[in-house]
Image 1 (cartoon, rainbow, N blue to C red):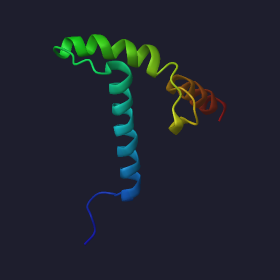
Image 2: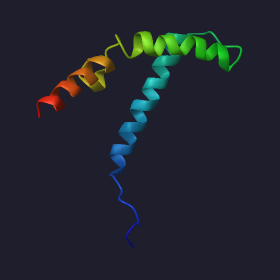
Image 3: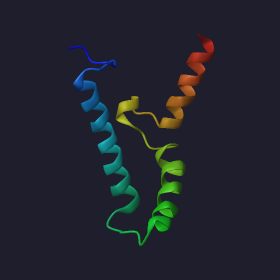
Image 4: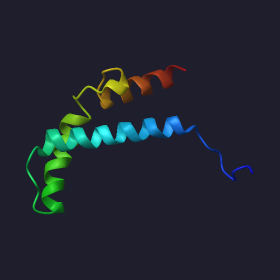
Length: 83
């Protein structure tokens, strides 16, 4: 029986899940360490500057050929403008 929607190979989904889990683990370890925020507001005050100020701008990611997400997106934009 055919599925009513297109499916991608299971390995692709496992790979995406592994990247997401790795990202969450890294953010927790680097931004929070052993600290447990008192509430969601404290968590946001900690995570937003970490993610926007460091993680996306400066931290190198192996899945992006050891470039930061910001650098990867700049290169992608430049490549798509040329094409």
